[in-house]
Structure formats: structure tokens, C-alpha cells
Length: 98
Image 1 (cartoon, rainbow, N blue to C red):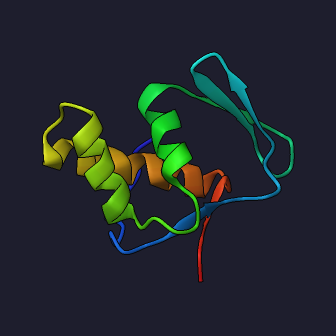
Image 2 (cartoon, rainbow, N blue to C red):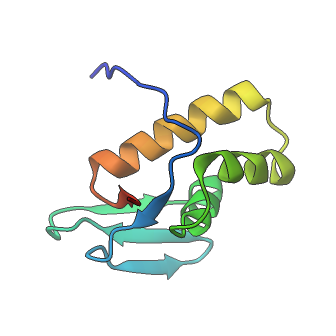
Image 3 (cartoon, rainbow, N blue to C red):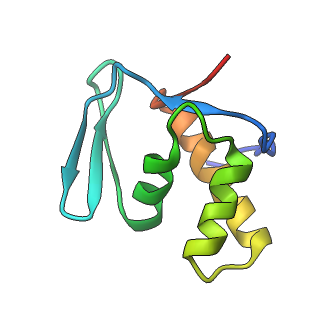
């Protein structure tokens, strides 16, 4: 499936969907979708990003923290963050803060 990817505004602030239970499993997380129809497993950098989504940090701040924590080019980190956030939003796991 080919997705058209729209770059997120780096000033966007997201929060976890309160209707999605989260369990820590080892170094990763298992997140249940809002309708409890699916579970999503995230590891390593995905869990790092999930833990930075707190309703206060904007995506630019999260990107800066990724660049400080991991050895990755800024362009790669930006693209990967955008893809991951898009997937989280499509699954209903995170919501924009108004």
C-alpha cells in the first residue's frame, strides 16, 4: 500500500489517546487500539518517541531529543518521525492537543 505522506508541522503537540491501554513489555510497549480491535507493538526508538509524547512537547522538541539520543541524520530522523507519528495518528493512538 502506498501512502501519501504529508509532512507534519513541527509545532504540533500530541497526547496519548486515553482510551488506549499501554503495557510495558521488556524494553518495548504494547498499545491497544481505542476499539480494542488491534494491538500495536513498539520497540526502541518508537518507545522513546511514545514516552516523549506528553501533551506538552511539540514534534520539533521530540525531534531534537531524537537527534541528541541517536546517531542519525536530521533528514532521516525527520522523515522517520513523520512516518511514525502518521501511523500513530491513523491508528487513533495519539491525538493533537488543541
